[in-house]
Amino acid sequence: MDTAKKEKYTLRQLRALKGYSKEELSRKSKVTSRTIFIYENDVDKMRNGKYATLEKIAKALGVRVSDIFLDPDSEKPKSITGETKQVS
Image 1: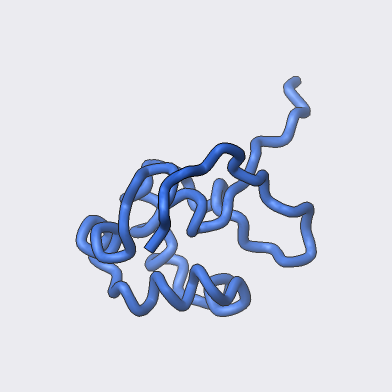
Image 2: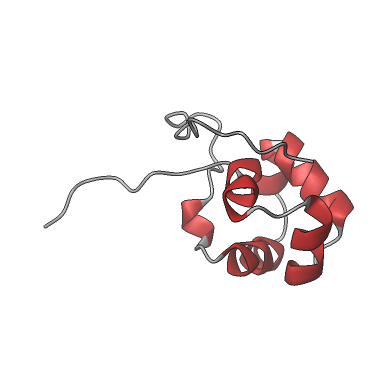
């Protein structure tokens, strides 16, 4: 059995890895850019948001909801090193 934990990333990090702007992720996920902004800046609001909304965002990013860092009390998400892209 593989006991290694899969790395988790914040929503902003996942969006940056895909090279999406908030507006592009909004179009792909059919979630408002305002909601994406709120979720990127307030983990508690994302954790307490609708699961269906998180599913739409995760699907647009090509990940599972469980791949998104949601728990502020858990281990910090992996940091993206060498990131040169400006995230809007």
